[in-house]
Structure formats: structure tokens, C-alpha cells
Image (cartoon, rainbow, N blue to C red; front, side, top):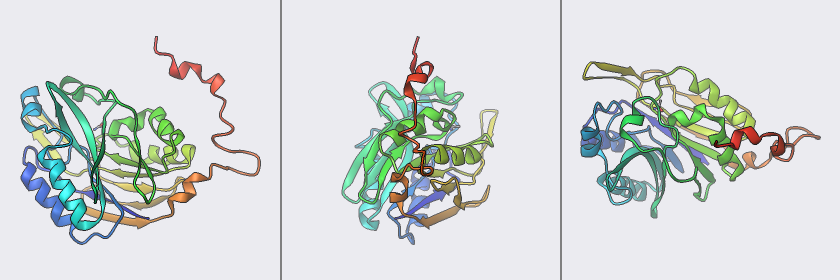
Length: 267
Ligand code: ACM
């Protein structure tokens, strides 16, 4: 399976330009799956709810999803990327998955980061796992990495590869994802963005270093901090099906959920 990421610097509020950039970068790619950044069509640093309202789209049906479907069909590829979703009077920080056959599904970010909590509604669906032919693909978005339960749930649901659109501003995720992969014996593709956004007196700098990590926590590929990068790597996702750690230990069989009750208490 050939998997990759498109690390670039989306311009805030310039969806057409960002889609053109994506199309240019994807042109030469030959892969089964490409992961794009979180909020790749709009940029990240919203400063009020009106902006979210103006820049969000329906999934499916919106302009960006339609664009991705055409691109996926033409290139014979799966694309997973983040965008602001509008559903009635609610807005979600979502990821959409499209295949050469069309719209496949979406995920609404469960763990919202910082001021996202002001504009977006937290995800109300499950952490999804999609059969995309070449692998079973689980999806989470950016800050979900901070909650190990997200990757665990995806792995328990059969994900072999975690697709992880991101707009990372903290320096920890890239190293932490190595542990997420090791503790679940899965592959992960984190696609981060680059650049700095300055808006309304606020400033965020994104940490780049998009990466592909294997089930042994080895970094197969990592981009630099600031460069626009199309990264592609080949691996066998079937390796994620074997949860044996050694002759006597199996990652999933050896779990002891009866001791983990605190994790699922909601009160
Ligand atoms: C993040 O969740 N975009 C940090």
C-alpha cells in the first residue's frame, strides 16, 4: 500500500487558492491514500463564529467535498482531509474521506482544542473505521492524539492505519504518535500544516513534521518543519493485524478491561 501526506501552508479564507495548491501537489502522486491537513481548505485561525458560518460547507454536497471527489476519481486515489462542516445551525471540525467511487464518510472531531470550543460543536458520532480496499482506515483529528482512548478505540475496531489530519501548534504530537502506534500496533499518517497565521492580534505557528509511523513506532517518513512536502511511503498494512508482542504476550488478548473502569466512567 502506498500512503502519504500533503503538507502545505493553507491561506486563511482562500478556499479556491488552497484547492488549487492541493491539485498542483497531488498531480504527480501515485498512491492509494493521501492525508491532508485539518481545515485544509479554510485555514485554522477563526476569530469569530460568523467566519465559521461563512467558510463552512455541507459534507457531503459542499464545494470542497465535490472537488475532492473529482480529484480522487481522476487520480484513482483515496483522500482524507479536514474542513469546517455546516449542518443546519451547527458547525463541526470534520474530516471527509472520498474514494475514486465518490463520498465515503466523515468524522467530526471529538476533542476540540482551545478556541475551537467557541465555534464548533464536539463530534457526536463514533471514531470511524473505513474499509478502503487496501486497508482498514481509522480517522481522528489533531488534538484527539492527546487522548489515547481515541487511537485505542480505532485499533480495537480493526483500524490498521490511522489517518490523522492535523494543525499542530504544540511540539509533542509527532513523538507521542510513535507511542500511539506501538501501544496499538497500527500505522499512523499524521498530516500537519506549515506556516504562521496572524489574525486579529492572534498568532499561531504550525509545527510541520508530518509523518508516517509504523506499528513498531518507527518513523518511516517525516517532513521538515516549514517545507511544502508531498511524502509517500509504501508498507504492508497486514502487519498491523498481528497483535502478538512475543510468544507469550498479545496486545489485545492480554488487555484487562475489568481493571480499566475509571476510563469509561462518565459521572
Ligand atoms: C489542534 O487540535 N488543531 C491542535
